[in-house]
Image (cartoon, rainbow, N blue to C red; front, side, top):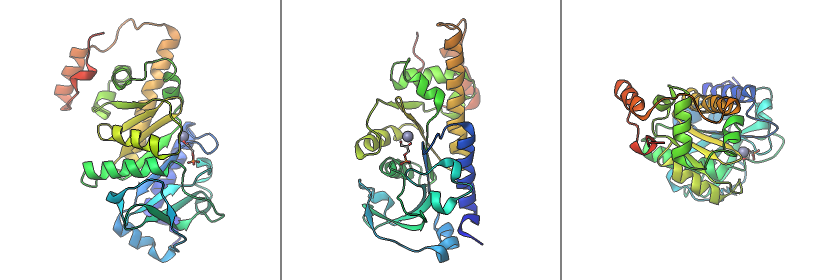
Length: 274
Ligand code: 13P
Ligand code: ZN
């Protein structure tokens, strides 16, 4: 068996390729990380060769000692499925959650994604909030969501409500809503702090004029969440392209009915009168 034949690596590669096929990963756009289970680390332990410790650029004590599979900085999602050893890596965090070292991958050199601080800070929040259930953080350059950040007010309430209205499944798939980070310089601790704050409340965070972050339990749920929100954004872009105002839409009371039948809680702050 090769490293990339382990089930969790195959799942990671398939998800990266699915995102590529959706058109969300031009060039090196986007990044993906998975918090590896201890039994999965054991499965591939014989392939691991630890390199030098490097600073993460932030502190994630809640993830001390954990292993992650991550895409490489500057690497293309398009190549993950054909050249995993060059495009992705497995990293281990130290006992303080301040440094990482590559233990597999980046065969031709390089480092984990420049968004590692955002990925790890989001993982730390989600691990805490879900008793360790959430394991995937995904950043994609979702075309239609990005387009909407040029025309809608950059407010959680507005993006949540507008995306909920565009597809009946949306309030069921992301009942907590979506957060919005205003435009910020990517790749550092500052944007990571803002994003992880939103991840306390939501599973989705939009980066204005840039893309989206999704968090979830596994590859299917996290990809599905990104896909659902982006599809809804695509419908809204089409609607707004046809006319400025909707002739009809789903009303607040109809969302309340839906919430009852589907047994989800929809925060009232998103069900405002327009
Ligand atoms: P990386 O190639 O460093 O992952 O960066 C891509 C990206 O989308 C930055 O936000
Ligand atoms: Zn990006």
